Each structure stands twice: as C-alpha cells, then as structure tokens.
Amino acid sequence: MDKATTAAPSGRLAAFYFCFVAAVGVMLPFLPPYLASRGLDALDIGLVLAAMTAAKVAAPALWGTLSDRSGSPLFVVRLGRLYHCRFNCFAHAGECICLCQVTQCLR
Image (cartoon, rainbow, N blue to C red):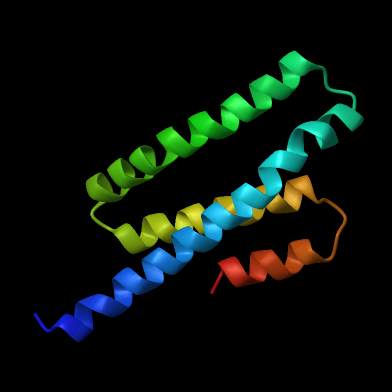
C-alpha cells in the first residue's frame, strides 16, 4: 500500500482526536463551577464527572462490538449519529437547531 493513501485517514483521525481532547480540555475546568451554580453539591458534581469518564471508557468498546457483530459498520455509525441528534433535540427542546440536526442525521 502506498504511503500517501494511508497517511490521509490517520491524519484526519489525529485531527479529530486533537479537536476532541481540546474541546474537553477547555470545557472540563469550567464544568464544576457551572454545575455548582446550578445547585448541585460536591457529591453530585463528582458523580457527573465520573459518569462522563465511565462513558468515555465504555462507549467505544460497546459501539465497536455492536459494529463488529452487526456486519454493517456504516449502519451503526448512522444509528449513533441519530441517537446523538435525538439526545440534543431533547436536551435543547424548543430550539430551532433541533430540526436542523435531525435533517442532518437523515442524510
């Protein structure tokens, strides 16, 4: 296999992970004070942060297993995107962005 054909996907993956880690790194220091201002106590804030970490550990393995067993990885990616859009619609109910996200998921 040519070196140029394998460099592009790994470069895109590296860029994605860089952006993901940067976004989490920017958000994480401000999340506990924000949650405290919303009325959560220290135990609740700790549980929220622990749930985020547990999801980051467990979710890739679960989605990978589902993708391997289904035999259709693209379907699993589309299913994950649809669930993501549905969650955002329920989390931001009443905002017009909801309709835009659902239409993007159907593409």
